[in-house]
Image 1 (tube, rainbow, N blue to C red):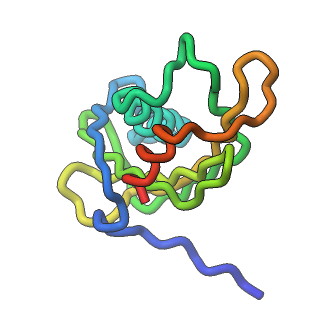
Image 2 (cartoon, rainbow, N blue to C red):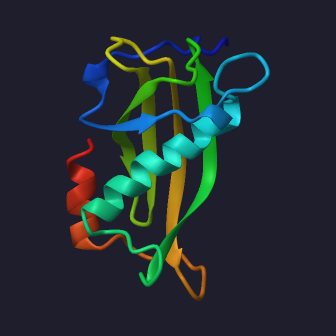
Length: 145
């Protein structure tokens, strides 16, 4: 059985967007954004959204999100100087885990230049044991579905 080839997705696949400005240092020797930068954009887009909505306190919160899985597929290059529009959605939510999917678009483009996902397991900051997502957190996630 062959897996389906990943495809670029349209903007309508994502309910929330945030702008990210590329930096000079994001480009690699080949003149485009290096692949590792895409993963930092995933973190930035999702975590900034959660912080802005008051459900993630990276310094003093009881829980932290640990990445247990990540992936990215690339369809078109991005480069400095350019504004990237990151679309965010929740593809799956468990009792203590969330699969976030992020689509990266060149500003104004209809299809993703790259898209990927990561899974956070939310754990107690001290014990590192999974803990259930709070009702307020779940409410914020519901708007990303």
